[in-house]
Image 1 (cartoon, rainbow, N blue to C red):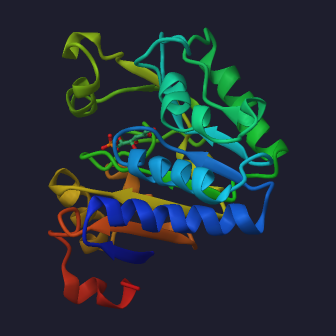
Image 2 (image 1 turned 90 degrees about the horizontal axis):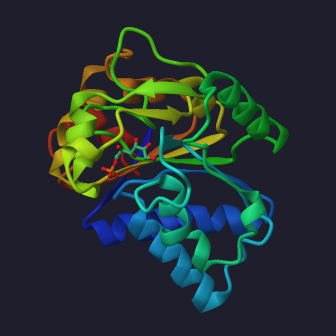
Length: 252
Ligand code: F6R
């Protein structure tokens, strides 16, 4: 894992956008894996700015999002479908037909998930997957557990994730308890992964992933250590519990 340290959230967002811009400029038909949540919002804002300022071209780009809450329609303001339109797709020249966010209204998540994974494969696979990390070390909505899904499938959200994400909803009771999420296998197939972590709320998870030198399904983000091309962009707060003596060589 390569590590890029940023001095602020804005710097983190700019550095993440640099990597995305580099890919999209060199491959107009790039396939991006996208995340929702607070962390990538600044990156998306930065991409919109680059589209407006120097016409960064998304017309041939295809996107696949990681996850969606079960029971929320795309038109629901709390859905991740809505989030993506609001925070990115509505403001750039992407062809909406080429953007994909899992359908939270599916009544057969297993079959739907297989179809979603096949769609990713048919698009040529993900060139660059953007990931956030949960305070409990989840990636996408793959929560710490004895076993993790390989492919896109139904997941039950942990108490911690429901608590963390209640800030986006009217109350904790309104947070859906289930989601459809890309599995760890779907994520690990991406050719390159960009993991973003900001703020002290992520320090424990990042510290555990980088310090222990172990992989475990109880800390899903640790499985990323097995991927050959992961870049972590991290601000100082999220990096604060990492043992710098161990990780010094990884910082670029
Ligand atoms: C979002 C997702 C989640 C978030 C994670 C961090 O699509 O899959 O894994 O990346 O929960 O969320 P924030 O960025 O809100 O702290």
